[in-house]
Length: 246
View 1 (cartoon, rainbow, N blue to C red):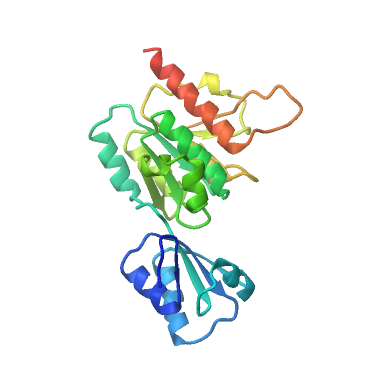
View 2 (cartoon, rainbow, N blue to C red):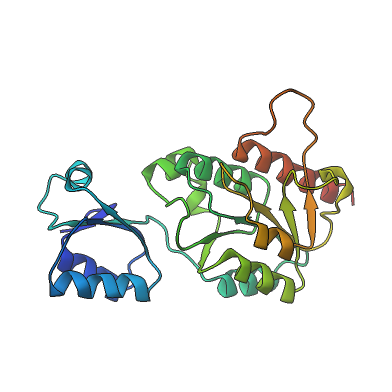
């Protein structure tokens, strides 16, 4: 019923949720009916698990097995809570560096960011439970295995993570072009967290409003933006540069 990446079948998915398996996303056949499927959907909502209603052709592409109208992607890593991540880090670090990803959806961008985060000493990555790119085999491959080395936490809403970090004495810096301040005018010397937005719309307005600082990259060419994984790398290495000047 289960392999390293997927669970299929209604009862299997129900049991996986009840057993706290690290489920990234559940794909449910459109129009699926029955008491058991309703019980499953209730559990999915209660546990804040990302789900999508898809045609049966999509499920047939995901698995050749008898899926009964549902396939769940299982994460190869175990996620932390934000509280676990921050508390554990603050026990050993005086100037931690965290990374928040607001609705990043591309698994390869996610993998590339995890790889750069590991190389730059990021203490943990925080993503949203719903809408975020899952940790798949492609993510692991693109991260060059760094996904097993960088702690990743999930939270219901990124804004809640912002508030929790701020309450823990950690400055939150939003990477956005919607500011006059460049990355070189912001200090990364204190405990801080960098927010990167989604590939298409960037950081959501409510999260921008909650951040302590906003910073942008100077763009000298005609193209108006960088790939999010590239931009993230520039931000992280600016933090490294500043901290090495101590």
